[in-house]
Image 1 (cartoon, rainbow, N blue to C red):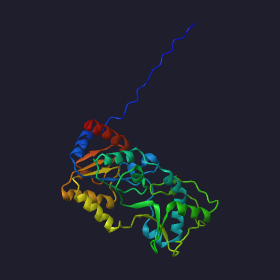
Image 2: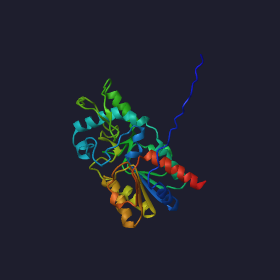
Image 3: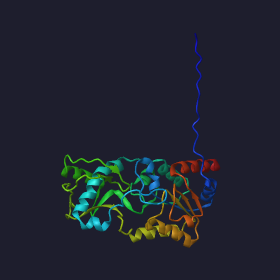
Image 4: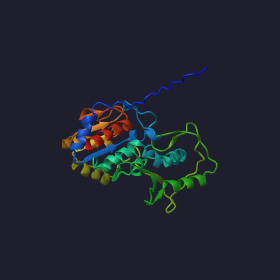
Length: 293
């Protein structure tokens, strides 16, 4: 007795492009100088979580304030113990589709300047140039006393040497550390600066800390020369990023956004694609490639 076998192939369909994609492609084609500002939504696909839900509300406890970090050694022990657990995820992260697609669009001339609120260094790793890291980078550590800098990997080695056998499990947080729950960091040892003994701090902007004025002025200068502002993967709930949307309004520039949820600038947007970054940027890249063929 023979059996007849039939094979059925199920086609995998790409996500439907979001409404407004063709209009966004046209804006990019018409723009001579587009400035892009990115946020956490660009890095969620590589295992670094975002801060807020679709409605712009906090998903977890707010990050440590600068005043708390500087004012208490206990707070610094808690921060660096969490960072000790979370750092390997950041160190091992590689650019995702959003980072690579933005770099490709920049190389092809559709993007001129890229400003990121992220501190993971993934836009630079993907090849974007220039990248303005508005909130700094987790890959660097700076002394609050003398200004000396060292790589975060080097500090990880010092923390490991000071805390042999120290272990804790925790879930990753957006700012590069981990949520350790009830883990006791009382005995976690932290080093001072090798040059002056000062307080070591990640070279990022903490909540309650101002972005350096020259960095802000640089973005304003680039925005004044732009004719389109594109927001990718950011709710703009924090003033440090939202201020540039306000400035774009003052300058009369159109603002487009790709974000899977509410943004603080919703009422000021010329165009919004409420969809995940990776799928939307991939569809945008395909559309622009066809148009340029």
